[in-house]
Length: 482
Image (cartoon, one colour):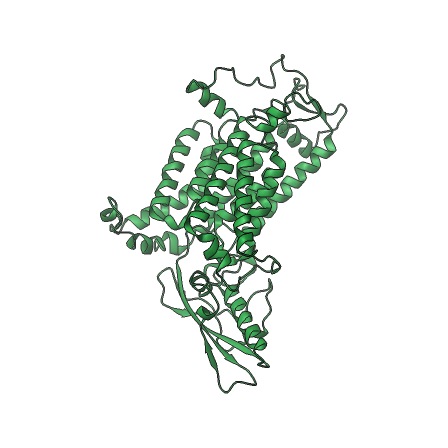
C-alpha cells in the first residue's frame, strides 16, 4: 500500500490539515485510511457469528459441555491461568447459552461492540479452562474475535446501522471503512497459512509422508475413496501439495487475477480435509468463510447485483467528486492505532517461532507447540503411569491417570510433558490431603510419534512433584528418537 502523490479527493477519512505524514508510518497511515466499502466486513461479521452459533449448538447437541467441562474432577489449566475454572453444571450451560446469544448479536450487528466483546470473553474463558481441549481453530477464533472488537464491522447490514441511521453523533451510518481494517484480518489469516506451511518443512512430512501415511491408511474404509487411499504414492502427493498450498495460498489470494481460482482451490482443499479428517471439527469451514475477506471490499454487493438481489449502484470510490467530505482524522491517534496493530501482528509472528529458543524437536517436546499453527503435522500415541513414594508409604504406590482424569484428558496427557507434570502435581496434592508426607511422584511415559518406535518421554528418575511449571527448557524431558 502506498500513498498517492497527488492531493487526496474528499473522502470519508482524511488526515487533519497540517498533519505531517512524510514518514513511512505516515504514508502507511494514509494508505490505511483509504475508504472502501464496508460490505466485506459485514459479510465477515455475519459468517463469523453464524459459525459461532453453530459451534454452540454442536456442543450442546453432542453433550460436550458435560463431557469436557462438568464431568472432569480436575482441569489441566494453562500456566498462569489456574484461576480459570468451570462453573457449576448449570453455570456452564448458561455460559454456552450466553455465548450463543452473543453469536447472534454479532450476526445481527445489534449492540455490536458489546456482542463481540462478550463473545471474545466467553469463548476465550472456555478455552482457558483445560489445555486438553486446545485446537488451533479455537485459538484462531479467539484472536479474530479480539481483533473484531476494535473494527467497525457493523457499519452496514446491521441493526446498529439501522437504529442509528439518523443519529449524527454516531459513526454507524458512514458509507465506508478504512482499508486497514481489511488488512488486519487478511494478515492474521495469512499468518495462519504461512506458519502452517513452515511447520510442514521437515523430513517427516516431505520425505516420509508422515503422519498422512498413518491417517490415510486408517481411512481406507471411507466410501468411494477407500481404494484410492491405499495407493502408496498418495500420502507423498498430499504432503507436498499441502505444504505448497499453505505456503502460497495467501499470496495467490492477494493477486486479483488469480484470486477466484485460488479460492476455488482453497474450498476444495478444506472440504477434502473435512471429509478425511473429521476430528479437526469446524476449522475447514472457518477458513472457507473467513478467507472471503481477501476479495474486494464490495464483493457482497457485486454478488447481490449478479444474483439480482440488489439493484443499487456500487459504493462510490474515493475519487468520486460527488462524495461528501467526511471527518478529519488527527494523525497521532491514527498512528497509535497503527502501531498497536503492528505490535499485535508482530507478536503473532514471534509466538509461533518461540520453539527456536528450546532444544530438541518441538514435535516431541511440545515446548512452543501450541499457538504456532502446527496443523496436522504430528500423530502421537502414548501411555503414562505414575509411581508415588512418601515417608508414610512402604515402597512405591502405582497410580494410573485414569484414577483422576477423563478418557480424553488421559489420551492428551500421555504425550504432553506439561500435562504429565500437571497430573503429577494433582497426584501429589491428593496424597498430601490424605495425610502422606514428603510425597514424590515419578512418571513412566512412553510415546511414539509419526510412526517411530516407542520411546520414553520423561526421565523416570526425576521427582515431578518437586518440579515447578515455567517457561524455561524442561531438562526432565528426554531427547526424542531420530
